Image (cartoon, helix red, strand yellow):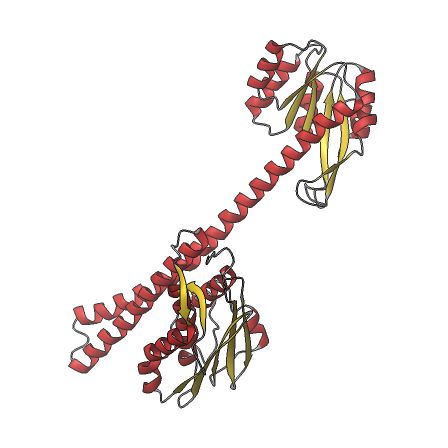
Length: 397
């Protein structure tokens, strides 16, 4: 490796991130070409697509194909300007070697013999672009700018794919845990019955009841998962029509009433008149059922739940207030994440999928609305959902 290559070599420190600097290697046996390319490109700034940011180019060079390959083994380059006519290995030979190594550098072939045959051969060997001598500084910048933007978009796509894989792995890990726990519990109860450990009818009935509770929790988790995937994938069929939120709230209260009565929890609906908006009724039911059932589930015995529905020209508001166990600010800050359940001594025996509030926020966002929560430990919690009267993108004619 010659002194010029060492002097212009790019640092291997990646702390600044791959979006700040792109490394360019010029492989050409003509000193004037190498020097000219360095003057034109070294420090050249390329605007990032769809952002206000940019990347800077840093240039190194090599006199032959062999030297260029050696440089690319020593460090990573993003763009290679490769002369077709080189002493020893030709540019096409270098391309072939890079292709065999699966090097992802973008290669721009440079040649004084611009012909269709050379262009086709270079493309087959993996060249990204083709630049014929003589060319102007601006033509060189344009070719490198195009390669740089392609490299950035490719890097962004790979980064996004990796993030998606990581999120999917984390999601599946939590899901497996959430499904495994009730299965283990049900299996334990069935083993007791099978082995005759539950000899009296009361113990057997208790084992069956607990198994049914666990299975009901699994069913709720599966239903919530289906709702979540349909919403996020955009595959959920949405049927917009006038929906009376007061009517839906009343139905949600009636659904939760048996559980509330078991614990002498008072439930009351506050609405002076029908509140109508254009919406998918099933989505509104999911929102209110989640809020009302949670208000009962996390309440104290003898507490109360107040549901208030109001409307205005600009939108509607649904408020569900309980007198339950409440939460700290730290707990409310992470409340809307997937599979998030507040775990402490007061919630230890409360079942839930950990998806309901995540689904609630996603649905509110679909409507161009928002969900907020105010809570105080041992005092209670208030959820407020605000939605526009007409959902974005819903043409009501």
